[in-house]
Structure formats: structure tokens, C-alpha cells
Amino acid sequence: MIQLTRHISFEEMTDSKSHPELVAQNRIDAESYIDNLRRSADLLEIVRAHFEQPVIVHSGFRNDRLNAAVGGAAKSQHRRGEATDFEILKNSLSAAFEYVRLAVKVYDQVILEPGWIHVSIVAKDNRRQALIRRPDGKYEAVV
Ligand SMILES: [Zn+2]
Image 1 (cartoon, rainbow, N blue to C red):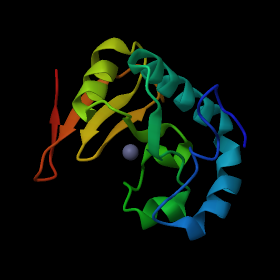
Image 2: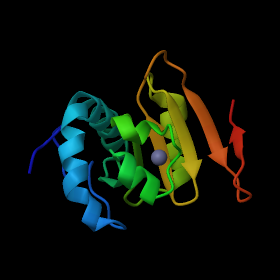
Image 3: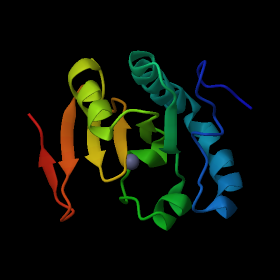
């Protein structure tokens, strides 16, 4: 195992439960984005430390093939290792969402999705955009 940070490994940030056949190539491609993956893991460590519970990573880096296979947006930040989908053990998604939204100082985007939190690191400026995905699939901004 390769640790990106104390608690977050390269393997969990490049895994896919739904498409295990794509993981090997995904990990090869992820090596070009290791700095972004480390910064993503740093953000997860902040959340983990606050809740004192493990972060469960659903999806981190996705190469184009894996991203397409899971139905990710064509320009998804997952393709550059800038985004992570996660939940926190023993805590609600809304608690994790509110914590990132209000307390994390630097992030690009946080989205409360049905079943996980999507969070991305800063690409250009410190956007700190917070969205909730509604049951109809539309995104609603939280201000
Ligand atoms: Zn995502």
C-alpha cells in the first residue's frame, strides 16, 4: 500500500467497486496526478480529524474510461484526481456536507449527493461552491 496521507491510501483513492476490471489501468493513469490526489487526501484528513471517524472513499481518481463507465460528467474533476466522493462512518451525509461547506477554508466545490458527498480541491480560485442534488437530479445552490 502507498499512503498519500496518514490515513488515506493511493489504493482507496483509485479503486472502483463497480468496475474492478478497470482498476489496474486506472492506477497506472493516476500516477500522473499524485500531487492532486495527495491534496484531495489532505482535505479528507481535515474532515476525518473533525469527526474522529474514518472517511469511506466511494470514488477518487477516475481515468476517462472509468469515469465514462460510472456515468461521470465529461469534464469531471475526478479525471484529474481533484475530486473525491465519500462518507463518514457513523455520521450523516448532511453533517459532513455542512462541515465542509462552513468550516473547511479552502475547497472548490462540495455537493450533497444521494448517498455520498462530492468534494473537490481548488483548481483555479477558492470557489467554495456548495450544492445539493435534488431527487429530480437538479442541483440547488446553498448560500
Ligand atoms: Zn464526485
